[in-house]
Image (cartoon, rainbow, N blue to C red; front, side, top):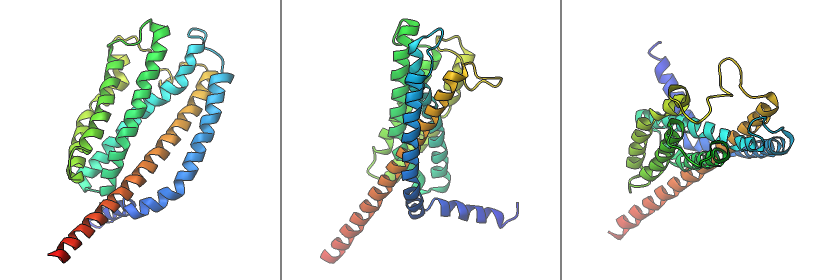
Length: 257
C-alpha cells in the first residue's frame, strides 16, 4: 500500500461519516426502507401465518418461528453492528458512530426481548416449560443484558463522549458472547434445536416454511434498519440542539460578564 493510499482511504471514511451527509442520505433512504419493510412484512405475515402449512411435528406452533427466528438473527446481527460502531468510535473518534451506537442499543434490547418472549411462547408447548437454563437461552439472556447495559451506560454520564467510550468498551467485551450464542447448540447438549436454516449442507426445513421465513427475515431487517436510521437522525438532531444551546449559554455568559 502506498503512503498516499491510507490517507486517501481515511478521507473517504471521514466523508462517509459526516453527520450532515448522513442526514441527507438517510433522509432519502428512510421512506423507501420503511415502505419496503412494511410491504414485505405484510406479505410475510400473510404467507407465514395463514398460507404456509403447519409443521408435521410442531403443528401450528411453528408459526411463532416467523417472528422468533428473525428476532434472533437481528439480536446477533445488530450486536455485531454495535461492535463495528464501537471499534470506529474508539479508533477514529467519529461522533456519528457514537450517536448510532447509542441509539442502536435500545432497539437491539427490544428485538432481543422479543426473541426471548417468542422463544418462551414456543418452548412451552414443545418442551413443557417456559424457560430452561440451557446454553442457548442463557447466552441470549446475557446478550439482552449487554444491550440494556450499553443503553444505560451511554446515558449514565453528563459528558456524552465519556459515555460513548464506556459503552464501546462494554460492547467489545460483550462480543465474546456472540460465538457462544451461535454455536451453543453445537458445543453443548441443549433443549434448543440445532441450526436448521444456516446449515452448510442444506436447510433443514421444507421450502414451504423456509420461503415465508426468509421473507419475514427480510421484512424485519428492513424495519430494523429503518428504525435505527430514524433513531440516529433524531440523536444527531438532539446533539446539534444541545451544542447550540451550550454555545448560546456561553455567549450569554460572556456578554453578561
